[in-house]
Amino acid sequence: MNRELLERVRDSLPRRLNAGILMGDGGFCIMGWMLISAGFHHITLYANTLGVVDPAVGGPAVDVVARVYDLPREAVLELARLNDATPRATRSEAVRARLDELLAPAP
Amino acid sequence: MNVDGGELVVRALQREGVTHLFGLGGGHINPTWWAAQRAGLTLVDVRHEAAAAHAAEGWALATGDTGVCVVTAGPGLTNAITGLANATANGSPMVCLAGSATTRGQDTGEVESLDQLEVARPVTKWARRVHHLDRIPEYVALAFREARAGRPGAVYLEIPIDLIHSGIDDDTVAVPPLLQSQRQRPDAALVGRAAELLSQARRPAIVAGSGVWWSRACEELRAFVEHTGIPLVTRQSARGTVPDDHPLCFGNDWQNLVYRADVLLVVGKQLDYFFGYGFFPHLDHLIQIDVNPAEIGRNRVPVSVGIVGDAGAALSDLRDAMKPLATDDWLSSLREARAAVDAGKADLARSDQVPLHPMRVCAELQSLLRRDATVVADASNMLMWANASLAAYEGGRMPAMSNLGCIGHGVAFALAAACARPGTQVVWLVGDGSFGFHAMELDTAARFHLPIVTVILNNLGWSGAWVPLGTRHYERLAPGFDGIGELVERPEQLRPALARALAHDGPSIVNVLVEPEPEYFAGRFLG
Image (cartoon, rainbow over all chains, first blue to last red; front, side, top):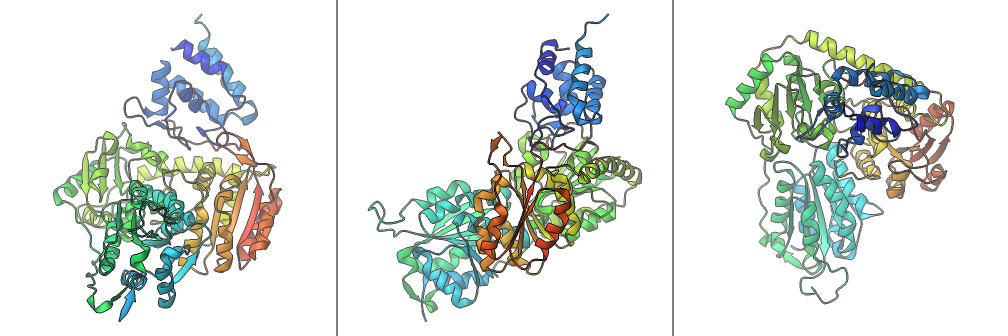
């Protein structure tokens, strides 16, 4: 895993995450925040957390995040699902806790 | 009979079937203005030339015909430039007729003198000046042909003030033949290859874009999907060409369709910002139909089959080349996915939160609209909620915003739609920031008795980089324009306020205070 990048995501996590929108009225979901944190600023702005449209390094968002963060695809999927399924009030904390788990040293 | 340049312009416009002109008067275009009045054309005079240009595009978006605006020289044109740029970016056919200073007065300090051609060229697909009075009919005809040639767009034609005021015997003026509408048929071998790939697909899908609307190919598109059983989404000006409640139509949620498909047919849709730049590496095959060869494989997207031709002709030929496909399982999985998304949307649409959730506003509005209503959803963040909530049942009812990124111009689209379809509901859905751009066009609506309902999703500021605008009572503007104004602060006030506005015979404003940081709905495709 790209530990440095993942730590940056965790330490800069917005006080509240949204449930699927990448950018706009309500800020970011975790996928959007991870993509922006990794430098994908030119991705589609409105309502697209599904894909990164850079012909050179793009693809479905889950695949791009997995590749850039060097994480298993399943771990990224789980993170995205956790984001979407957790109520707004506790979403950010739930995602932060999962990031802590991912960053914890292996026993 | 001795006639002036304005008379020649208007006769040429009438030959092209023009009934409405959008513009703002001025000395440099008076002959055209007066001739249009004599001829009985409807002259919709707006309060700023940007609105004139946007309304001309709006006419095209609402009717499928070429829109026309008339603006005066100098600032008349520079004010209209954004509208021309938007139409060109959107691929909407429109003609801008402008006055200009005298040829002789160039560099003398003459009033409203400007090198207008150089200003217009970058934002139009064709820009010309008429140098000889007897060539006006020819140039007007050329302008209409160029506006619709290949990918449509804005064209610009200027006539100097000294020329348009001068006279000529109309017996000496040659009139060009009217070009009959015709369709460019695609290559049969490429159609055959596309039919083969679609027939072999396990999860075929269609994305229909504006090219379908400009080709007037609603019937061909519907016939093709019903014959083959292939699901589709409609985008931009194709919204409503197959109604959203058709069993094979999945609205405009292109992502949930495209990312699940294995073979994709893209008809008349640019591979642009609004469409992920066409970059879908998961696809086995991407098949593209476009009237403009330059659009095939734009952004270096690999295209298995690129068909250059008219959307209607290509869809008709493709239908003849294909047998019905077994898509029941594929459709079931798509409907299941849509149900998950719809459930998320429905939760937000029922929200009783204060300030109101924008999804609640859009859902309540939708429930009060008739099938032939026009909803102009202005751009920016607000468009996201409109796209997620509002259904299109007929073509031209949901005018497309362009990737130029204009905001606030929706009122001009609404003006044009209300002119095109008197007696139908026309709603301008807009944010409080964008509302300020062209709010004075509600005066135009009042003067022309156009009962446009303005619904402001007021989050008290600019959303992008948060800049507060504060609580402003925009609804209080309405009585000044013969309208009614409603302030909605609580959910229970919303529906009655919208109903009153829709029932009013004049422009109205419903100012709804909405959540600045609304929750989005879940249910996206994650793979």
